[in-house]
Amino acid sequence: MAPLNIIIVGAGIAGPAAAIGLARNGHHVTIYERSTTGQEVGYAFRITPNSDRCLKHLGIDTIAGGAVPANNLRIYNSQGDLITEANENTDPEMAKKATSVFAYRPQLVKQLMDAALSSGVEIKTGVKITSVNVDNTSLTLDSGATVSADLIIGADGLHSAIRPAIIDSTTHFPKRTADQNAIRFMLPRAILQNDPTMSPLVSGDLTMFSWIEGPAIIIVYPVEHGTLFNVTLCHPAHLSDQEANKEQDSATATSYNNKVSFETVRDVHNGWDPRAIRLLELADPDGFRIWKMMDMDEIPRCSRNRTALVGDACHPVLPHGFSGASMAIEDAITLAEFLERDVDGEEIPALLELYEDVRKPRVARVRERARESAVGGGVEGRAEYMQFLAGHDAVRFAKERLAEYKRERA
Image 1 (tube, rainbow, N blue to C red):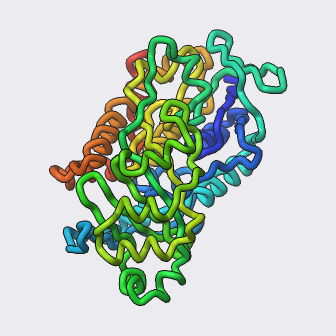
Image 2 (image 1 turned 120 degrees about the vertical axis):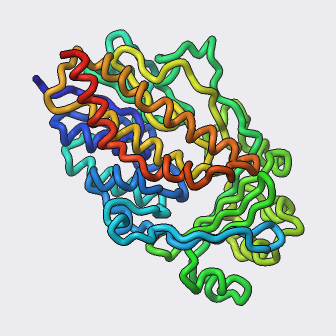
């Protein structure tokens, strides 16, 4: 069979991850990215073993790229009382196969993009998609040019330009606020180490520490070989909506780079553990960024004809579940496994249906768990859930389901 001509829209995490796998299967892959740099504004996230396993399959070594193993975790309540602590990556042999890590988004995107280029993927930045035709599998670009393919993959996030061509946006209005806002900033390790209040938290072997009170949480963890700490503050939206609404409308928000004042950040956490307040005081007051967290009702379908969605374009996951990037990576690896080197192009619609059948149940459970965690739940059954999440082998599962699909059609 002739190689497929595949267009991927979006160069975040899922886009280049899918591109690597598809290009290594011999297909011709082109990525179109709206930004001029090919990298989105972003901070950091957790990569659980299920997705680290996928990245290793693609040849991506997250730790070599600066990710920090998520070994020792400690959670306090807002008054500073220890609630729980845990140790991960305790099995050295298992860690060789898959590790739980904290990754800096720009660095992981760079690793993926570099690997995509090395695999022969063509990357075009500064390109905006103005229309999509799923009947003839083509895109119209802002230059006026029309490009066609055997397959289009929309990896362009929550505000996807591809999704309206797959579902009727006049009938389905899937985006909605999660009634929470998020604030993020970065802090150099040296600043924390040199502060008497914070030094005990960052000078030992503790990797992640957080404070939690109901639906409000502060999460702190290292990235970039441990030289930077990513700080994420999630809280009920009414506590900071006055400033969040200055910058973005809940229905059209597209930016994760809007400023918020130190005074607002401090007031949201009024009365919390002095260590948490000191953490905020040490930050650059111009470095706080705020956005409304967006959720999305489950949409009727994530593919149509020869066009499919992956990652947030299909199913955004609230950050409380530490799984948005992981689900996007699993999507990407599943599609790549289904679209083998010798795949018959006529089978693409059926294989995309298989992709949806495989991914929907798992992603639905992950999204629901994240919603529970967002309102202070998600504690019961944690061990069983973590096994479900982290123990999954997306590559093996995709191979098994593809083999089953072939047997049924034989």
